[in-house]
Length: 106
Image (tube, rainbow, N blue to C red):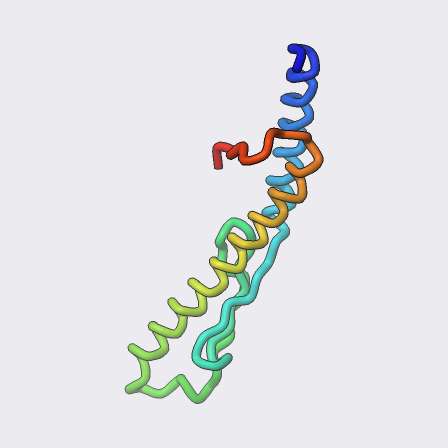
């Protein structure tokens, strides 16, 4: 591969990475726990955009259970966001002609 072609690919990759970062912010995923009693939505940056708690969990002696369910729903949402980011990254980088198995620094 010649140097000019490599430089062109590097510039294209830089442009694609900027586009990817913009797309990541727009990703949203719902995390759930407790058979849907707790639901939340996270964006691609991991920020919580909404939280819904079934009223049946809002009892005085259910606080610890509710806390655990919120954490579980957040973890579920984060896993889904990470999977969506990975998928977008693969889609975007697939067209750049990079060598198979090349890992990117993120």
